[in-house]
Image (cartoon, rainbow, N blue to C red):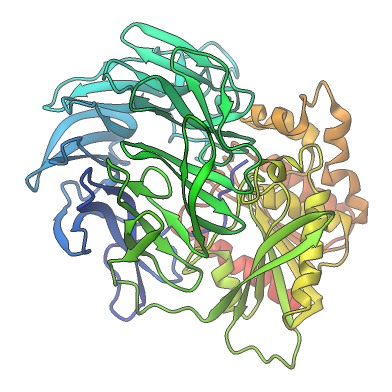
Length: 636
């Protein structure tokens, strides 16, 4: 399932009324090979108001000064800027949603030119080592946007019939312009890829068939002209394949991951010629979330506890060194941190719960802010890192407290459970979304990282397999106890909410305990048995349950909230997208129906045309109002 919080507002508008506070966003950050220049896609977002942005390609020097802005397609949404090997050009994509086209541009000397345009969607342009060719991932004539979190196509007609389907393929085009040439076959979905150093082929994570469903069974493969070869078939999920500079081995992140894009695990290596993968970071008490191969070594980004930072990996002997983490969140275009070609300079967009995003650059582990657009922004709350022990685990979470609360009085608190479960809450500047709206309404917000979360090593991630809602709920309840010892929380006015896995956990929680007086479950799972046959990503469940629902139905049934619906007494608001592939609306309908049958206060909102994420600004705004109003009714 997705770690995406369904209630998060998507943002944006380049033009904002001067009276409204504005958040400046820096997306898609890429650092030039010499470490002297930065490119981002900049936009402005009205604080606290869902909207939808048009960004501008923005160039800066290492001091943060803007040296150029490019906007060749005003109806388009730009993505994936990447520098050429010589640092003289930038390739980037422009998607025109209305026209259904994707255009690859190259920017040189301040002038953008079209390299190629296609009907469909495209992603992740990559320059060949000699700079003569650009590769990209392409879905021609796409029926939907890429990814299971996007709204699904209508399910009508003969389901499962042998008809044409979307496939994401590696294609190449001369950097000077021309037509696309496809490298990977038309029956294979490629998720991630990178050139080999000789420029003759690609390493990739790929699977036959449906791209939404088969990432969990993807193999590590090599593709060249007329060539497809399996390098390895890891037992874990795999992400971020990178070839060593000598072209001998492939590095990647492997682990128990619940959703494509939610990257986390250990760092592995395997010969490019093929072989058995070797774990370079076994038993390390953190989660690796990004991987970059530079001339100066292998650099990784890590989540440790709820904090993020940078580490260096020894690709031969294994082991981790030069680790630096802090209570911030980091984000760049191709991972959490971007590096120059030598690995001597790093750059990232850095933010905390209370300090707005800024571009930071410097030596790895010693980045300094070079932008100031968000310095004047403030939030009316404080953030605190909370740790506690439970069942032999050390658990971590974040407590957000509205400013000005009377410490002599007890106040209501909402526990916000993240999706995944393979994910983690790390610091993010709260300018919109459920947490922001609840804090504005006067609620304390507790965001735990229970077992199953990233941040404490792979063993911690693995600890909730076949135990959804067991140990992780005990961790959360123990965390609430810990918070109540340090904050003025009214235990009689507790709420619980979450989306995706957090939606399941909300459904589960209100059937296991009456400690919470109100809940809001977004895109949850009521019945793992029926869910197995309804969703479009059933392959994700095998690593977590150990077998299919048909081979081991007992464990699926045991962990289904609907089996305990007669215990439920907590008023619960339920919501979901109409075309949710990952957690179909039927699951929310089933849980709502069960609550109604028990006489429990409930309401169900199904958002027309939406997928796993509620993306339309008007729907995001409506959802925010409904969630706050629901908790106000029962907790105030």
